[in-house]
Image 1 (cartoon, rainbow, N blue to C red):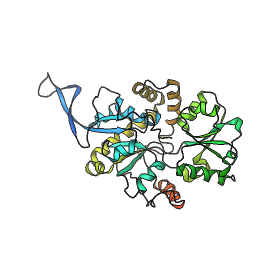
Image 2: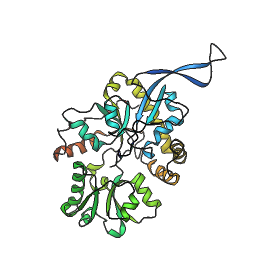
Image 3: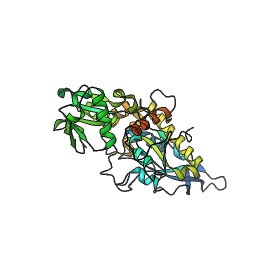
Image 4: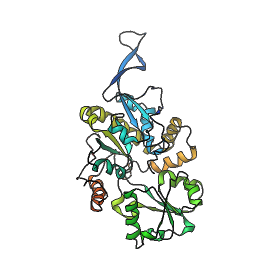
Length: 349
């Protein structure tokens, strides 16, 4: 549900500056004319600068999880790093499959959903290379009038599930750790697109990401209870979302990968310090978004990009491994996940 692939436009390209064209294959280069620079050889010609083409595929339509990418594009950080970056929306089968196949060098996914990619008999050739947010900001939301102010009180209430084994195991853990009986929770298999409408209908509780749907509830004036998963069980403070990269690309183009992440880091650190300006950059890239929601969401997430960390992007191995160890212990993966599988900090500055 949270990846929201259902309505994704197949390989439609989202660009936000005067740079144009679709993303190329890894390592390809194209000659670009740099504006504002006179050629040393002729005053009539602009200087030539080679830009390496890189494609970045989102997990869903543009939102505040992605702001740092658009800041890096708008502010010219990618071009300064020698890159021409295409930011595209995912195909129906999602960002990770596209990155794994080489159709994009980088993409966005989540640690919990990546578990299946890493534990299958034929693991997908992708690696998480940076954390977009430092903490899991997802949790359970319900109208306060329902009285669900602790997980155990979900008994006798409806919960919208997307029928993922990991999702339901997380729910069972928090409910029963709080003394409740998960079998008494009424699971409703449904896709919740409009959180406000769902809570006013027949859904009592929904798993949301506070930075978007939680802020939307605030703006709609809903009086809600919100239970963050990271507070209910520290093992659920996993990384969500993360930037992933194609393994072959990383092996063959390490300097390009470092240059890309350096520019992205500058974008997110700018957004962390300049919430209002960053929101306007995102709105420029995606004018169809609700301005009030983007501004409020950006204010919230700008404090989450780094949280207590001095620099953006680093993945803590203990937290990463802790969640995957929990999946192993509860037999929620096809094959046991090895320690430190699926992530690296080697391409961050």
